[in-house]
Amino acid sequence: MTDTVRNDRALQEAEEYKDGFSLIEVKIDRDDRSPALNRLTNYLGKGVK
Image (tube, rainbow, N blue to C red; front, top):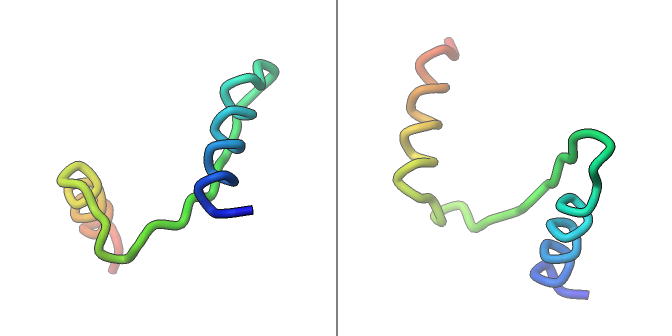
């Protein structure tokens, strides 16, 4: 099973699960970052010493 198939299955199962929260671990390439993710990590990094 490929990572894409695993991710798609996890997202489908999470969407169907209505009794609580779902956490999904997704692995992305180190350099595959959106501008929103860059802003988030910069913001969170300011709180880390």
